Amino acid sequence: MIAIIDYGAGNLRSVANAIALLGYDAKITSSPDDIVKADAVFLPGVGAAADTVSSLKAHGLDDALKEVIARETPFFAVCVGLQVLFEETEEGGGCQCLGLLPGKVRKLPAGVKVPHIGWNNVKNTRAHTLFNGIDDDSFFYFVHSYYVEPDLGTEVIGTTDYGLNFTSAIARGNLVATQFHPEKSGAAGLKMYDNFLKSAIRGN
Amino acid sequence: MLTRRIIPCLDVTGGRVVKGQSFLNLRDAGDPVALAKFYYEQGADELAFLDITATVESRKTMASIIAELSKYVFMPLTVGGGIRTIADMREMLLSGADKVAINTAAVARPELITEGAIKFGSQCIVVAIDAKRSGEGKWVVRTHSATQASNLDAVEWAKKAAEMGAGELLVTSIDSDGHQKGYDNDLNRAISESVSIPLIASGGAGTPDHLYDALTVGKADAVLAASIFHYGTYSISQVKEFLARKGVAIRR
Image (cartoon, rainbow over all chains, first blue to last red; front, side, top):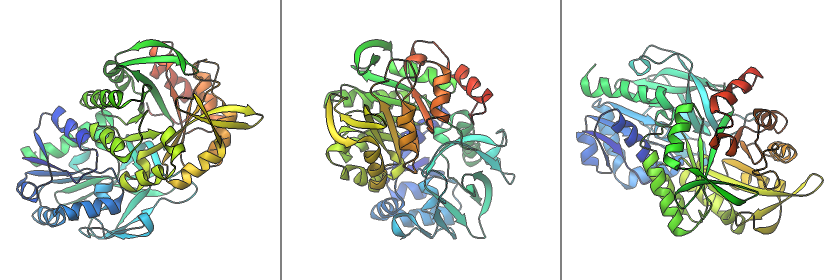
């Protein structure tokens, strides 16, 4: 079973629609039990980090996330879903995140318009199955004001320039996460979800 | 490099796309789901849907349209018209919208901007401003589909909306809307230079040159257009090719 985590916000429908179009069944769920048993887990993200962290905790999902990441269940986090995995964020005057990955979330620098909204290139900086069949420097859709600054232990597999060169895709074991929204990025984004699901569900 | 966005706008009433002039004289322009698919395949960067009826019933119709088309259309969707509460915003976001545009409700109660930004993130909250020229370098904000005047100066209101937590501004020139004689680039530039959030220019596109002017002279980050696309005067790819040739950063 593919689980899409429902924490009361987030663009769940778009992620579910993308997975359905690719020919997989997914279940939108807020049950920790479902998530722990899933073959693959998506953590979508639209929202504010503080609100997302408190919603996840209120649903008892923080421990479930910790467990699936520890046992290497294939896991895909998007946008704020990526950010809340880190230790802390500058958003909202500073707040603690889930601390499942080492590193911090910072505000995009002054001098460019923030939020960063629109289609921007992603440079694939390290070979990874997520980018199979996707041209380097392809355009993906971004909409965010903060970016992650991972510490050691997380592979940076994609970067993007906007005000600075920031991390736009990461991998660690079976966990992958993107700052951009594959479910909003047309053919390239659908291909990225397909790559993830192929390796997660079919093992290739 | 971040590219400038070309955004077809679908004004929806009674489940159909319509287009008017200065918010009046509406003409039918098609089925919203079919048009959305068409623009997605053509390479539009984003789609905007404005519910111009703005009743509880029409909002439900809009939500079901968005839910249906988001099965096939994997690109950003902004929905506006009649959105007054956090619950309205959530309904649209759960239907598949990525951003909600608020206009009259934000003027009536600016705190709605902040509440939406706290709940869903600033990037979700687009403040739509309908502005009418009131003198040299002066524009006044109108509400209720431009039928009612407010006492707000458009540039001052734009600054306040940004401070309150808006993630983006959708600025429509009431004078230019639907006339296809170009955007009000004095208005666009005045606002774009006063805020540090992206600006979508709207109202007046008739030729690719008008879009170019809005992105350069008007300093807009994105351009919204309806008639030139709906009636097939220009295709998205024609417009994108034109802009790219003129040196604008465009996704192709």
